Image (cartoon, rainbow, N blue to C red; front, side, top):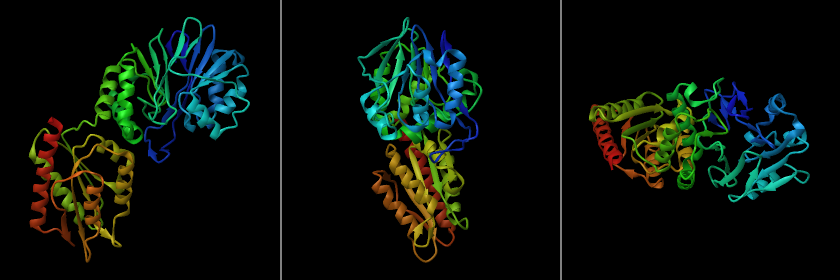
Length: 396
C-alpha cells in the first residue's frame, strides 16, 4: 500500500483481537509500520511480537533486509516494539533512531547493549536522499518518550498512537472506509488512552499546526489523507474538554428498581429539548471502552446503583474507578438507586461525585425496594434538570 512514491505501509492486521489490554476492540486493530526507500532506507515503527515474521516478509518484498539503514521507534509500548529485537537482528545494517527517554524505556524491556542506537531530538535531521526525517517530541501523548516523525518533502506525519483507531480492515485510508465508524473509533481511542493528557495534546496540536500536512499516518488503524482537518478539529475539541449537549445515564440493576429510575431520568431528559442527546447504558452490558467514549463529551451524568452486600454493584464500582483514572472534564451529576434495608450504594456514588470534583445538581434519588410514582416523577424532573444543565454547559 503506497502512501507516496517509495513510501509504503508494511504493517500487519490483527483481525481477531477483541481485548486490547482491557480495551474492547470489536473491529480488531492494525499494527502500522512504514517503509521509506530513498538513497537510504528507513522503517518507521515495528510491530507486536507475533507479527514480526509478517513485517520482515513485507520488508523483503520491497527491498533487501541488508539495505535497511534505519528503524525509527516513535513509541516504546510493546504493541509497537514487541518484535523490535528480532527486527533489528534481521536488519544487520540498521541503526535505531529514538529519543533519550525512549532508549531508557526500551532498555527496561530489552538488552539493548548490542544495538546500534542514534539518539534524535527536535533539531535532528536524518537525510535519506531526496527526503529528510525530522522529529517532534510529544511527551505524555501518551507515554513520556512518545514522538512524531515528519517528512517535510512529502508532508507526511507519522503520529504513533495519536490520531489512531482500532480497526482491522483491508482498506488503508480514511476515505476508503465508513467515515462515521472511523470517527467513532478515533473518539473511543482518544477517550480510553489519551484523555488524561489533554494539556499535552493541545501543546502537540499547536506544534503540528505549524507544519503543512498532507497525510497523518498513525500506528493503529486508517491513515488520514482526506479528513485531516476534521480529525485535528476533533482532537482540539476533545483535548479542550468541550461539552456536547448530552446527558449520560450509567447504572446497574438487579430487580429493575434502579433501572426504572434510570428510565424515568432518560424520559425527562429526552422531553426537555430536541437539541439534547441522551445515552443510557447498563454498565454490566457495555464495555468500559464504550462507556468512556460516551463520557468524553457528556456534560451531565446520572450514576445509579442498588445496594448489594453493603456496597454499590461491582461493575458500577469498576466504572467509577476507570473514570477516575481517565480524569474527564468535570461533569454536572446526580446519583440514584434502590436499596432494601441499608442505603449504601447510592450514597457511595453521591460521595464520589464530590471526590471527582463534579457538580452535584441535587440530592440522590433513592427508592426502598421499588420506586413509587412520586420517586419516578422526581427522577423525571431530575432528567429535565440534567438536560437543561447540559445545554447551558455546551453553549457556554
